[in-house]
Image (cartoon, rainbow, N blue to C red; front, side, top):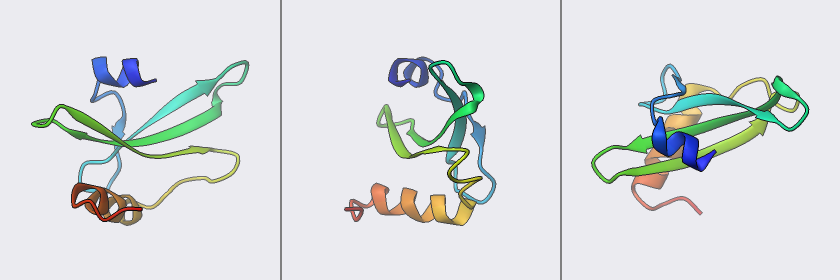
Length: 82
């Protein structure tokens, strides 16, 4: 996953209201994309970094609201996340 996102940082769809967070579907072995996980990440282009924000299974959680992802991104950008 890390290599894939490093090569294609804009692969995921932009999450509305998140301030630039992207979400990509990732297949689990033997499960296909529909049975896989969702990976939310933020690309810091100037720094050459990809911040992995959340990884979750779709069968556990349908989605995470954009404003929640924006808050998490802000906390990571300013070094406030635990």
